[in-house]
Image (cartoon, rainbow, N blue to C red; front, side):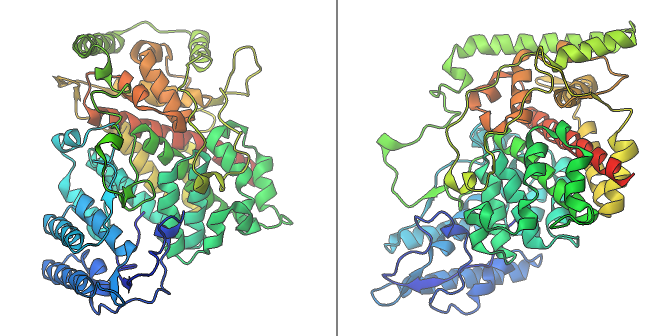
Length: 562
Protein backbone atom coordinates (compact mmCIF):
# COMPACT_ATOMS: atom_id res chain seq x y z
CA UNK A 1 0.00 0.00 0.00
CA UNK A 2 1.41 3.35 -0.93
CA UNK A 3 0.36 6.89 -0.28
CA UNK A 4 0.05 9.37 -3.11
CA UNK A 5 3.57 10.72 -3.54
CA UNK A 6 2.36 14.07 -4.81
CA UNK A 7 -0.11 14.80 -2.08
CA UNK A 8 0.64 17.75 0.14
CA UNK A 9 3.80 19.30 -1.33
CA UNK A 10 3.04 22.78 -0.07
CA UNK A 11 4.26 25.83 1.67
CA UNK A 12 2.16 27.26 4.46
CA UNK A 13 1.71 30.67 6.01
CA UNK A 14 4.64 31.45 8.26
CA UNK A 15 3.72 31.72 11.89
CA UNK A 16 0.60 29.56 11.51
CA UNK A 17 0.12 26.30 13.39
CA UNK A 18 1.82 23.34 11.78
CA UNK A 19 -1.04 21.14 10.59
CA UNK A 20 -1.22 17.73 12.17
CA UNK A 21 1.55 18.06 14.75
CA UNK A 22 0.19 16.65 17.97
CA UNK A 23 -2.88 15.29 16.22
CA UNK A 24 -3.36 11.53 15.92
CA UNK A 25 -4.30 11.60 12.26
CA UNK A 26 -2.66 14.91 11.39
CA UNK A 27 0.08 13.40 9.28
CA UNK A 28 -2.37 11.09 7.53
CA UNK A 29 -4.64 13.86 6.32
CA UNK A 30 -4.49 15.11 2.79
CA UNK A 31 -5.60 18.59 3.72
CA UNK A 32 -6.30 20.40 0.51
CA UNK A 33 -7.82 23.44 2.19
CA UNK A 34 -4.55 24.86 3.54
CA UNK A 35 -3.85 28.37 2.30
CA UNK A 36 -0.26 28.13 1.15
CA UNK A 37 2.09 29.61 -1.40
CA UNK A 38 1.85 28.33 -4.95
CA UNK A 39 4.99 26.50 -6.02
CA UNK A 40 3.84 25.91 -9.60
CA UNK A 41 5.05 22.75 -11.26
CA UNK A 42 6.67 21.45 -8.07
CA UNK A 43 3.21 20.40 -6.83
CA UNK A 44 3.43 17.51 -9.31
CA UNK A 45 7.13 16.82 -9.01
CA UNK A 46 6.82 14.22 -6.24
CA UNK A 47 4.53 12.10 -8.42
CA UNK A 48 6.80 12.53 -11.44
CA UNK A 49 9.76 11.23 -9.42
CA UNK A 50 8.17 7.82 -10.03
CA UNK A 51 8.34 8.16 -13.81
CA UNK A 52 10.12 5.36 -15.68
CA UNK A 53 11.62 7.98 -17.98
CA UNK A 54 14.98 9.03 -16.53
CA UNK A 55 14.86 12.49 -18.10
CA UNK A 56 11.42 13.16 -16.66
CA UNK A 57 12.59 11.97 -13.24
CA UNK A 58 15.60 14.29 -13.43
CA UNK A 59 13.34 17.21 -14.40
CA UNK A 60 10.92 16.37 -11.57
CA UNK A 61 13.79 16.20 -9.08
CA UNK A 62 15.00 19.61 -10.20
CA UNK A 63 11.49 21.04 -9.86
CA UNK A 64 11.18 19.57 -6.40
CA UNK A 65 14.46 21.17 -5.34
CA UNK A 66 13.53 24.53 -6.80
CA UNK A 67 10.12 24.44 -5.12
CA UNK A 68 11.61 23.69 -1.72
CA UNK A 69 14.28 26.35 -2.12
CA UNK A 70 11.62 28.86 -3.16
CA UNK A 71 9.70 28.18 0.04
CA UNK A 72 12.91 28.56 2.05
CA UNK A 73 13.64 31.92 0.45
CA UNK A 74 10.15 33.05 1.37
CA UNK A 75 10.55 31.84 4.94
CA UNK A 76 10.30 35.14 6.76
CA UNK A 77 7.60 36.71 8.96
CA UNK A 78 4.33 37.17 7.10
CA UNK A 79 5.45 35.00 4.20
CA UNK A 80 5.55 31.21 3.88
CA UNK A 81 7.40 28.07 4.93
CA UNK A 82 7.55 24.38 4.13
CA UNK A 83 4.59 22.38 5.41
CA UNK A 84 5.12 19.47 7.78
CA UNK A 85 3.79 17.10 5.16
CA UNK A 86 6.43 18.16 2.64
CA UNK A 87 9.16 17.79 5.26
CA UNK A 88 7.95 14.26 6.04
CA UNK A 89 7.92 13.39 2.33
CA UNK A 90 11.53 14.57 2.12
CA UNK A 91 12.45 12.58 5.22
CA UNK A 92 10.93 9.43 3.73
CA UNK A 93 12.73 9.94 0.41
CA UNK A 94 16.03 10.57 2.19
CA UNK A 95 15.68 7.34 4.18
CA UNK A 96 14.10 4.80 1.85
CA UNK A 97 14.17 5.86 -1.80
CA UNK A 98 16.21 3.26 -3.75
CA UNK A 99 17.21 5.87 -6.35
CA UNK A 100 20.52 7.26 -5.11
CA UNK A 101 20.16 10.68 -6.73
CA UNK A 102 16.69 11.22 -5.24
CA UNK A 103 17.80 10.04 -1.81
CA UNK A 104 20.84 12.33 -1.90
CA UNK A 105 18.95 15.44 -2.99
CA UNK A 106 16.22 14.89 -0.38
CA UNK A 107 18.94 14.67 2.28
CA UNK A 108 20.52 17.91 1.00
CA UNK A 109 17.18 19.73 1.02
CA UNK A 110 16.52 18.76 4.64
CA UNK A 111 20.03 19.89 5.58
CA UNK A 112 19.53 23.22 3.78
CA UNK A 113 16.15 23.73 5.46
CA UNK A 114 17.73 23.09 8.86
CA UNK A 115 20.50 25.58 8.11
CA UNK A 116 17.80 28.13 7.26
CA UNK A 117 16.30 27.68 10.72
CA UNK A 118 13.44 25.36 9.72
CA UNK A 119 12.48 22.78 12.31
CA UNK A 120 13.01 19.52 10.41
CA UNK A 121 11.97 16.00 11.44
CA UNK A 122 14.38 13.14 12.01
CA UNK A 123 13.70 9.42 11.88
CA UNK A 124 13.61 7.61 15.20
CA UNK A 125 14.86 4.27 13.84
CA UNK A 126 18.03 3.44 11.96
CA UNK A 127 16.45 0.82 9.73
CA UNK A 128 13.25 -1.00 8.80
CA UNK A 129 13.46 -3.59 11.60
CA UNK A 130 14.09 -3.38 15.33
CA UNK A 131 15.20 -7.04 15.28
CA UNK A 132 17.48 -7.00 12.24
CA UNK A 133 20.38 -4.50 12.37
CA UNK A 134 20.41 -2.14 9.36
CA UNK A 135 23.97 -3.23 8.53
CA UNK A 136 22.85 -6.85 8.41
CA UNK A 137 20.02 -5.94 6.05
CA UNK A 138 22.53 -4.36 3.66
CA UNK A 139 24.96 -7.28 4.05
CA UNK A 140 22.30 -9.83 3.12
CA UNK A 141 21.52 -7.75 0.06
CA UNK A 142 17.87 -6.86 -0.56
CA UNK A 143 17.27 -6.97 -4.32
CA UNK A 144 17.71 -3.37 -5.54
CA UNK A 145 15.91 -3.94 -8.84
CA UNK A 146 12.72 -4.99 -7.11
CA UNK A 147 12.99 -2.06 -4.67
CA UNK A 148 13.31 0.36 -7.59
CA UNK A 149 10.34 -1.28 -9.32
CA UNK A 150 8.31 -0.94 -6.12
CA UNK A 151 9.19 2.75 -5.85
CA UNK A 152 8.31 3.47 -9.49
CA UNK A 153 5.01 1.58 -9.19
CA UNK A 154 3.83 2.59 -5.72
CA UNK A 155 5.62 5.87 -4.99
CA UNK A 156 7.43 4.58 -1.94
CA UNK A 157 9.38 1.62 -0.58
CA UNK A 158 7.97 0.74 2.82
CA UNK A 159 9.59 -1.35 5.53
CA UNK A 160 7.53 -4.41 4.64
CA UNK A 161 8.90 -4.28 1.11
CA UNK A 162 12.48 -3.72 2.30
CA UNK A 163 12.45 -6.81 4.52
CA UNK A 164 10.54 -9.00 2.07
CA UNK A 165 13.07 -7.98 -0.63
CA UNK A 166 15.43 -10.46 1.03
CA UNK A 167 13.23 -12.95 -0.88
CA UNK A 168 12.46 -11.24 -4.21
CA UNK A 169 10.55 -14.16 -5.74
CA UNK A 170 8.05 -14.02 -2.89
CA UNK A 171 7.90 -10.22 -2.79
CA UNK A 172 6.88 -10.03 -6.45
CA UNK A 173 3.79 -12.21 -6.00
CA UNK A 174 2.96 -10.60 -2.65
CA UNK A 175 2.88 -7.14 -4.26
CA UNK A 176 0.76 -8.41 -7.17
CA UNK A 177 -1.77 -9.94 -4.78
CA UNK A 178 -1.93 -6.89 -2.53
CA UNK A 179 -2.31 -4.56 -5.50
CA UNK A 180 -5.21 -6.64 -6.85
CA UNK A 181 -6.89 -6.71 -3.44
CA UNK A 182 -6.65 -2.96 -2.88
CA UNK A 183 -6.53 -1.29 -6.28
CA UNK A 184 -7.88 -3.46 -9.11
CA UNK A 185 -11.51 -3.77 -10.19
CA UNK A 186 -13.62 -5.60 -7.64
CA UNK A 187 -16.99 -5.61 -5.88
CA UNK A 188 -15.92 -3.32 -3.00
CA UNK A 189 -15.20 0.41 -3.32
CA UNK A 190 -11.57 1.32 -2.80
CA UNK A 191 -12.00 3.26 0.45
CA UNK A 192 -14.01 0.37 1.95
CA UNK A 193 -11.14 -2.02 1.16
CA UNK A 194 -8.70 0.09 3.14
CA UNK A 195 -11.14 0.51 6.02
CA UNK A 196 -11.70 -3.25 6.22
CA UNK A 197 -7.90 -3.69 6.35
CA UNK A 198 -7.77 -1.08 9.16
CA UNK A 199 -10.44 -2.97 11.12
CA UNK A 200 -8.53 -6.24 10.64
CA UNK A 201 -5.09 -4.88 11.60
CA UNK A 202 -6.54 -3.27 14.73
CA UNK A 203 -7.46 -6.74 16.04
CA UNK A 204 -3.74 -7.42 16.52
CA UNK A 205 -2.99 -3.90 17.88
CA UNK A 206 -0.75 -3.33 14.88
CA UNK A 207 -0.45 0.41 14.33
CA UNK A 208 1.89 0.01 11.32
CA UNK A 209 -0.78 -1.30 8.85
CA UNK A 210 -3.48 0.73 10.63
CA UNK A 211 -1.60 3.91 9.68
CA UNK A 212 -0.81 2.68 6.16
CA UNK A 213 -4.40 1.79 5.36
CA UNK A 214 -5.79 4.86 7.14
CA UNK A 215 -3.75 6.96 4.71
CA UNK A 216 -4.99 4.87 1.79
CA UNK A 217 -8.56 5.19 3.06
CA UNK A 218 -8.35 9.00 3.17
CA UNK A 219 -6.67 9.21 -0.23
CA UNK A 220 -9.46 7.09 -1.71
CA UNK A 221 -12.03 9.61 -0.47
CA UNK A 222 -12.98 8.05 2.85
CA UNK A 223 -14.52 10.15 5.63
CA UNK A 224 -12.02 10.95 8.36
CA UNK A 225 -14.68 10.54 11.07
CA UNK A 226 -14.76 6.77 10.40
CA UNK A 227 -11.21 6.53 11.74
CA UNK A 228 -12.23 8.03 15.08
CA UNK A 229 -14.34 4.97 15.96
CA UNK A 230 -16.26 2.05 14.49
CA UNK A 231 -19.55 3.68 15.49
CA UNK A 232 -19.01 6.24 12.72
CA UNK A 233 -18.67 3.63 9.97
CA UNK A 234 -21.66 2.38 7.94
CA UNK A 235 -23.74 -0.42 9.46
CA UNK A 236 -22.77 -2.76 6.63
CA UNK A 237 -19.07 -2.48 7.50
CA UNK A 238 -19.75 -2.82 11.22
CA UNK A 239 -21.64 -6.06 10.52
CA UNK A 240 -18.26 -7.65 9.68
CA UNK A 241 -17.02 -7.37 13.25
CA UNK A 242 -17.96 -10.87 14.40
CA UNK A 243 -16.41 -12.46 11.33
CA UNK A 244 -13.36 -10.22 11.71
CA UNK A 245 -12.62 -11.29 15.28
CA UNK A 246 -13.21 -14.97 14.55
CA UNK A 247 -10.97 -14.85 11.47
CA UNK A 248 -8.25 -13.14 13.50
CA UNK A 249 -8.31 -15.33 16.59
CA UNK A 250 -10.45 -18.51 16.29
CA UNK A 251 -11.39 -19.20 12.66
CA UNK A 252 -12.46 -22.79 13.44
CA UNK A 253 -15.58 -21.32 15.10
CA UNK A 254 -16.83 -19.81 11.80
CA UNK A 255 -19.97 -21.59 10.65
CA UNK A 256 -22.55 -21.48 7.91
CA UNK A 257 -24.73 -19.42 10.27
CA UNK A 258 -22.21 -16.55 10.32
CA UNK A 259 -22.29 -16.44 6.52
CA UNK A 260 -26.06 -16.67 6.36
CA UNK A 261 -26.49 -13.68 8.67
CA UNK A 262 -24.56 -11.54 6.20
CA UNK A 263 -25.68 -12.74 2.76
CA UNK A 264 -29.12 -14.37 2.96
CA UNK A 265 -32.17 -12.54 1.54
CA UNK A 266 -33.60 -10.36 4.25
CA UNK A 267 -30.25 -9.71 5.93
CA UNK A 268 -29.90 -6.03 6.71
CA UNK A 269 -27.58 -4.84 5.40
CA UNK A 270 -26.98 -7.62 2.91
CA UNK A 271 -23.61 -8.61 1.47
CA UNK A 272 -23.32 -10.31 -1.89
CA UNK A 273 -21.14 -13.43 -1.91
CA UNK A 274 -18.62 -11.65 -4.14
CA UNK A 275 -18.42 -8.71 -1.72
CA UNK A 276 -18.07 -11.05 1.23
CA UNK A 277 -15.28 -13.09 -0.36
CA UNK A 278 -13.43 -9.84 -1.14
CA UNK A 279 -13.84 -8.68 2.47
CA UNK A 280 -12.78 -12.07 3.88
CA UNK A 281 -9.59 -12.20 1.80
CA UNK A 282 -8.80 -8.59 2.79
CA UNK A 283 -9.26 -9.34 6.50
CA UNK A 284 -7.26 -12.58 6.39
CA UNK A 285 -4.51 -10.84 4.40
CA UNK A 286 -4.31 -8.02 6.97
CA UNK A 287 -4.35 -10.43 9.95
CA UNK A 288 -1.51 -12.52 8.53
CA UNK A 289 0.47 -9.42 7.55
CA UNK A 290 0.28 -8.31 11.21
CA UNK A 291 2.08 -11.55 12.06
CA UNK A 292 4.85 -10.58 9.66
CA UNK A 293 5.08 -7.00 10.96
CA UNK A 294 5.31 -8.09 14.60
CA UNK A 295 7.43 -11.16 13.80
CA UNK A 296 10.09 -9.10 11.99
CA UNK A 297 9.94 -6.25 14.50
CA UNK A 298 9.16 -3.66 11.82
CA UNK A 299 9.69 -0.05 12.85
CA UNK A 300 7.15 2.67 12.00
CA UNK A 301 7.71 4.36 8.65
CA UNK A 302 9.74 7.59 8.96
CA UNK A 303 6.63 9.61 8.04
CA UNK A 304 4.29 7.67 10.37
CA UNK A 305 3.32 8.50 13.94
CA UNK A 306 6.04 7.02 16.12
CA UNK A 307 8.55 7.02 13.26
CA UNK A 308 9.80 10.61 13.51
CA UNK A 309 10.30 13.47 15.89
CA UNK A 310 10.96 17.19 15.60
CA UNK A 311 12.92 17.22 18.85
CA UNK A 312 16.70 17.34 18.88
CA UNK A 313 18.42 14.15 20.02
CA UNK A 314 19.54 14.10 23.64
CA UNK A 315 22.33 11.62 24.54
CA UNK A 316 20.78 10.91 27.91
CA UNK A 317 17.40 10.13 26.36
CA UNK A 318 18.43 8.17 23.28
CA UNK A 319 16.30 5.00 23.03
CA UNK A 320 18.21 1.75 23.03
CA UNK A 321 17.76 -0.41 20.01
CA UNK A 322 16.28 -3.80 20.85
CA UNK A 323 19.21 -5.25 18.92
CA UNK A 324 21.99 -3.29 20.60
CA UNK A 325 24.62 -5.38 22.43
CA UNK A 326 23.56 -3.92 25.76
CA UNK A 327 19.86 -4.61 25.30
CA UNK A 328 18.37 -7.32 27.54
CA UNK A 329 16.54 -8.57 24.43
CA UNK A 330 19.77 -9.25 22.55
CA UNK A 331 21.45 -12.68 22.52
CA UNK A 332 24.70 -10.90 23.41
CA UNK A 333 23.14 -9.91 26.75
CA UNK A 334 24.15 -13.37 28.00
CA UNK A 335 27.40 -15.21 27.33
CA UNK A 336 27.73 -14.42 23.61
CA UNK A 337 30.67 -16.76 23.02
CA UNK A 338 28.89 -19.72 24.61
CA UNK A 339 25.74 -18.96 22.61
CA UNK A 340 27.71 -19.10 19.35
CA UNK A 341 29.00 -22.55 20.27
CA UNK A 342 25.56 -23.75 21.32
CA UNK A 343 24.01 -22.29 18.18
CA UNK A 344 26.49 -24.08 15.93
CA UNK A 345 25.76 -27.38 17.72
CA UNK A 346 22.01 -26.82 17.24
CA UNK A 347 22.51 -26.45 13.48
CA UNK A 348 24.53 -29.68 13.29
CA UNK A 349 21.92 -31.59 15.31
CA UNK A 350 19.07 -30.23 13.18
CA UNK A 351 20.83 -31.25 9.98
CA UNK A 352 21.41 -34.74 11.35
CA UNK A 353 17.74 -35.07 12.30
CA UNK A 354 16.63 -33.93 8.84
CA UNK A 355 18.82 -36.57 7.19
CA UNK A 356 17.53 -39.27 9.54
CA UNK A 357 13.91 -38.38 8.78
CA UNK A 358 14.53 -38.47 5.04
CA UNK A 359 16.09 -41.95 5.38
CA UNK A 360 13.46 -43.26 7.78
CA UNK A 361 11.57 -46.27 6.41
CA UNK A 362 9.33 -47.01 9.39
CA UNK A 363 5.64 -46.49 8.67
CA UNK A 364 3.22 -45.53 11.43
CA UNK A 365 -0.32 -46.78 11.73
CA UNK A 366 -3.13 -44.29 11.12
CA UNK A 367 -3.99 -44.42 14.82
CA UNK A 368 -0.43 -43.50 15.77
CA UNK A 369 -0.45 -40.61 13.24
CA UNK A 370 -3.63 -39.23 14.84
CA UNK A 371 -2.14 -39.62 18.32
CA UNK A 372 0.96 -37.67 17.32
CA UNK A 373 -1.20 -34.91 15.81
CA UNK A 374 -3.25 -34.65 19.01
CA UNK A 375 -0.05 -34.50 21.05
CA UNK A 376 1.28 -31.58 19.01
CA UNK A 377 -1.90 -29.52 18.99
CA UNK A 378 -2.45 -29.90 22.73
CA UNK A 379 1.17 -29.26 23.75
CA UNK A 380 1.50 -26.38 26.19
CA UNK A 381 3.70 -23.71 24.61
CA UNK A 382 4.28 -20.58 26.75
CA UNK A 383 4.01 -17.22 25.05
CA UNK A 384 5.57 -13.87 25.83
CA UNK A 385 4.27 -11.42 28.40
CA UNK A 386 1.29 -9.36 27.32
CA UNK A 387 2.16 -5.91 25.99
CA UNK A 388 0.74 -2.73 27.39
CA UNK A 389 -2.44 -1.16 26.07
CA UNK A 390 -2.35 -0.38 22.33
CA UNK A 391 -2.39 3.24 21.18
CA UNK A 392 -5.75 4.96 21.06
CA UNK A 393 -5.77 5.20 17.25
CA UNK A 394 -5.87 1.36 17.25
CA UNK A 395 -8.05 0.63 20.29
CA UNK A 396 -10.89 2.86 19.08
CA UNK A 397 -11.23 0.57 16.04
CA UNK A 398 -11.54 -2.68 18.01
CA UNK A 399 -14.79 -4.19 19.19
CA UNK A 400 -14.61 -6.76 22.00
CA UNK A 401 -10.83 -6.33 22.56
CA UNK A 402 -10.76 -9.11 25.18
CA UNK A 403 -11.59 -11.75 22.54
CA UNK A 404 -8.25 -13.45 21.77
CA UNK A 405 -6.81 -16.69 20.48
CA UNK A 406 -7.42 -19.74 22.65
CA UNK A 407 -5.72 -23.07 22.11
CA UNK A 408 -7.68 -25.14 19.64
CA UNK A 409 -7.59 -28.04 22.08
CA UNK A 410 -6.91 -26.95 25.69
CA UNK A 411 -5.94 -29.87 27.91
CA UNK A 412 -8.92 -31.51 29.54
CA UNK A 413 -11.49 -29.73 27.38
CA UNK A 414 -13.64 -30.97 24.53
CA UNK A 415 -12.02 -29.82 21.28
CA UNK A 416 -13.94 -28.75 18.17
CA UNK A 417 -13.86 -31.35 15.38
CA UNK A 418 -10.53 -31.41 13.56
CA UNK A 419 -10.60 -30.23 9.95
CA UNK A 420 -9.11 -33.02 7.86
CA UNK A 421 -7.25 -31.54 4.90
CA UNK A 422 -8.57 -34.39 2.79
CA UNK A 423 -12.15 -33.23 3.46
CA UNK A 424 -11.63 -29.56 2.62
CA UNK A 425 -8.40 -28.31 1.09
CA UNK A 426 -7.19 -25.22 -0.72
CA UNK A 427 -6.21 -27.16 -3.83
CA UNK A 428 -9.47 -29.11 -4.21
CA UNK A 429 -12.04 -26.71 -2.81
CA UNK A 430 -10.92 -23.23 -1.69
CA UNK A 431 -9.02 -22.25 -4.86
CA UNK A 432 -11.96 -22.77 -7.23
CA UNK A 433 -14.47 -21.05 -4.90
CA UNK A 434 -12.33 -17.90 -4.58
CA UNK A 435 -11.64 -17.82 -8.31
CA UNK A 436 -15.33 -18.17 -9.10
CA UNK A 437 -16.50 -15.36 -6.80
CA UNK A 438 -13.45 -13.06 -7.09
CA UNK A 439 -11.90 -13.69 -10.53
CA UNK A 440 -8.10 -14.10 -10.62
CA UNK A 441 -7.74 -13.82 -6.84
CA UNK A 442 -7.63 -17.58 -6.39
CA UNK A 443 -4.81 -17.75 -8.92
CA UNK A 444 -2.86 -14.97 -7.20
CA UNK A 445 -3.23 -16.54 -3.76
CA UNK A 446 -2.31 -19.96 -5.10
CA UNK A 447 0.84 -18.57 -6.69
CA UNK A 448 1.82 -16.99 -3.37
CA UNK A 449 1.22 -20.24 -1.45
CA UNK A 450 3.24 -22.18 -4.01
CA UNK A 451 6.15 -19.74 -4.01
CA UNK A 452 6.51 -19.68 -0.22
CA UNK A 453 6.14 -23.47 0.04
CA UNK A 454 8.82 -24.13 -2.57
CA UNK A 455 11.14 -21.24 -1.69
CA UNK A 456 14.61 -22.55 -0.94
CA UNK A 457 18.23 -21.57 -1.45
CA UNK A 458 19.52 -25.04 -0.52
CA UNK A 459 21.40 -23.68 2.43
CA UNK A 460 21.02 -23.63 6.19
CA UNK A 461 23.07 -21.36 8.44
CA UNK A 462 26.71 -21.96 7.41
CA UNK A 463 25.92 -25.03 5.25
CA UNK A 464 25.29 -25.10 1.48
CA UNK A 465 23.63 -27.77 -0.64
CA UNK A 466 20.99 -28.62 1.99
CA UNK A 467 17.54 -30.00 1.16
CA UNK A 468 15.28 -28.03 3.54
CA UNK A 469 11.97 -29.54 2.38
CA UNK A 470 11.29 -31.51 5.57
CA UNK A 471 11.91 -28.44 7.75
CA UNK A 472 9.69 -26.18 5.63
CA UNK A 473 6.94 -28.82 5.61
CA UNK A 474 7.17 -29.24 9.40
CA UNK A 475 6.76 -25.48 9.90
CA UNK A 476 3.72 -25.25 7.59
CA UNK A 477 1.99 -28.30 9.08
CA UNK A 478 2.71 -27.21 12.67
CA UNK A 479 0.93 -23.89 12.06
CA UNK A 480 -2.06 -25.69 10.53
CA UNK A 481 -1.97 -28.05 13.52
CA UNK A 482 -2.29 -25.04 15.87
CA UNK A 483 -5.41 -24.13 13.90
CA UNK A 484 -6.84 -27.66 14.08
CA UNK A 485 -6.08 -28.79 10.51
CA UNK A 486 -4.70 -32.33 10.11
CA UNK A 487 -3.06 -34.04 7.13
CA UNK A 488 -3.75 -37.78 7.26
CA UNK A 489 -0.57 -38.60 5.36
CA UNK A 490 1.81 -36.54 7.53
CA UNK A 491 3.71 -37.90 10.53
CA UNK A 492 3.49 -35.16 13.19
CA UNK A 493 6.33 -36.79 15.06
CA UNK A 494 8.54 -34.93 12.57
CA UNK A 495 7.39 -31.62 14.03
CA UNK A 496 8.73 -32.50 17.46
CA UNK A 497 11.99 -33.73 15.96
CA UNK A 498 12.68 -30.71 13.74
CA UNK A 499 11.19 -27.75 15.62
CA UNK A 500 13.08 -26.89 18.80
CA UNK A 501 11.02 -25.49 21.64
CA UNK A 502 12.26 -21.90 21.19
CA UNK A 503 11.18 -22.07 17.52
CA UNK A 504 7.77 -23.40 18.55
CA UNK A 505 7.41 -20.51 20.99
CA UNK A 506 8.21 -18.03 18.22
CA UNK A 507 5.91 -19.69 15.67
CA UNK A 508 2.96 -19.99 18.04
CA UNK A 509 3.38 -16.43 19.30
CA UNK A 510 3.62 -15.04 15.79
CA UNK A 511 0.74 -17.11 14.38
CA UNK A 512 -1.64 -16.82 17.32
CA UNK A 513 -0.64 -13.80 19.45
CA UNK A 514 1.56 -11.73 17.09
CA UNK A 515 1.22 -8.59 19.21
CA UNK A 516 3.16 -10.42 21.97
CA UNK A 517 6.23 -11.07 19.80
CA UNK A 518 9.37 -9.60 21.35
CA UNK A 519 13.01 -9.30 20.33
CA UNK A 520 13.89 -11.94 22.92
CA UNK A 521 11.49 -14.42 21.31
CA UNK A 522 12.92 -13.60 17.85
CA UNK A 523 16.55 -13.97 18.90
CA UNK A 524 16.02 -17.15 20.94
CA UNK A 525 15.52 -19.51 17.97
CA UNK A 526 17.92 -20.47 15.17
CA UNK A 527 20.71 -18.47 16.81
CA UNK A 528 23.27 -19.37 14.14
CA UNK A 529 21.00 -18.73 11.14
CA UNK A 530 21.02 -15.72 8.82
CA UNK A 531 18.35 -13.08 9.38
CA UNK A 532 17.08 -13.78 5.85
CA UNK A 533 16.40 -17.38 6.95
CA UNK A 534 14.38 -16.12 9.91
CA UNK A 535 12.44 -13.85 7.56
CA UNK A 536 11.82 -16.93 5.39
CA UNK A 537 10.34 -18.66 8.46
CA UNK A 538 8.17 -15.57 9.02
CA UNK A 539 6.85 -15.83 5.46
CA UNK A 540 5.92 -19.48 5.97
CA UNK A 541 4.08 -18.67 9.20
CA UNK A 542 2.27 -15.75 7.56
CA UNK A 543 1.07 -17.75 4.54
CA UNK A 544 0.19 -20.92 6.46
CA UNK A 545 -1.87 -18.84 8.87
CA UNK A 546 -3.58 -17.05 5.98
CA UNK A 547 -4.50 -20.30 4.28
CA UNK A 548 -5.81 -21.86 7.51
CA UNK A 549 -8.11 -18.90 8.22
CA UNK A 550 -9.35 -18.87 4.62
CA UNK A 551 -10.09 -22.61 4.65
CA UNK A 552 -12.44 -22.37 7.62
CA UNK A 553 -14.32 -19.41 6.14
CA UNK A 554 -14.49 -20.86 2.63
CA UNK A 555 -15.80 -24.14 4.05
CA UNK A 556 -18.59 -22.22 5.82
CA UNK A 557 -19.43 -20.39 2.57
CA UNK A 558 -19.46 -23.70 0.68
CA UNK A 559 -21.90 -25.18 3.22
CA UNK A 560 -24.13 -22.11 2.89
CA UNK A 561 -24.19 -22.38 -0.90
CA UNK A 562 -25.32 -26.03 -0.90
